[in-house]
Length: 420
Image (cartoon, rainbow, N blue to C red; front, top):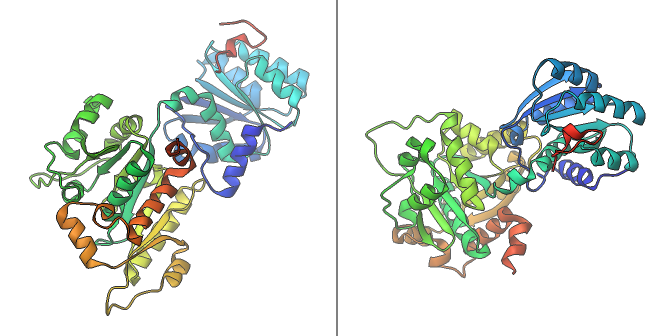
């Protein structure tokens, strides 16, 4: 038996690219294994950024252990069990587990029999999914996501975080131009949030003087909803919404990791793409934001300090996001007159990332656009650099947006029903 959904997730994991549309809401999960290999898979999946909202408990003993535990304590929303039992014994074990479950409890079975008939019969009797071992962590996460797909459909926004390898690398300029290009290219909603709270430049770059800024929204995050966010965001062009920073230095901006969580969840329901312009600093909330983003873009200049920092960032992100694509690299300000530079090929070899785009140094073009509060595509839409921003926007938006731009029962396991 081959499960096409499993195969898709396996292929995605092996290729190092995230499976599309994976989202796991706040949910309690109890996982019970019988082999060390599956235990490792569950532990790896529980540590993935996509599972950060879920609370996962991992225990040995398989279905029997789950049945015994939930006879004494209330079951979680989702139970994951591994079993090597033959079909008749497996069904008997699951029926006993069903007696300890609530009507809306969902169950994923991890088995070792590649049997399409078994797969179909399990689904018919209320099991939410059947996964065949061996499997990759991302396959398990994708299966959990499919169970909560109706919740996932409410979360439209894909998060892309932009950060500079050093101050002055031009990360904000890249983020603003890419966000603007995405909104115009794909006729889609893009929300650009300036998270350099005291010194952000998104207002200047779009010639805006917003009354409300990111600080006001963060301070009232518990009261922010999609309607209020829409009212507070500036809208310079069709499809583009901006949450700007305000230059108020009367107070310090010491954010905690949790400060952005509510805002990002609301923003992801308000726009298809959420672009975060991060400051070039290293705090707990910047680190957390990078670890949880769907895509990361590092902007660097071809010098030694920038190369070192980009290398460290790339290595950290590879280690902390093992199931995600590597960060994307933008090499900016290439060809400054009389400045010794590291060649793009040498820079890429040292950092371990090929540049997605290389932006030539053009003080006149970028200075004029900045002073006028306009994007590069507005100032010089036919130049190669404008096309480069658009191409990066296409890469981030992905094939889905490219296509859009072109046009209580009581069966055997009755208590486990409601999986769909």
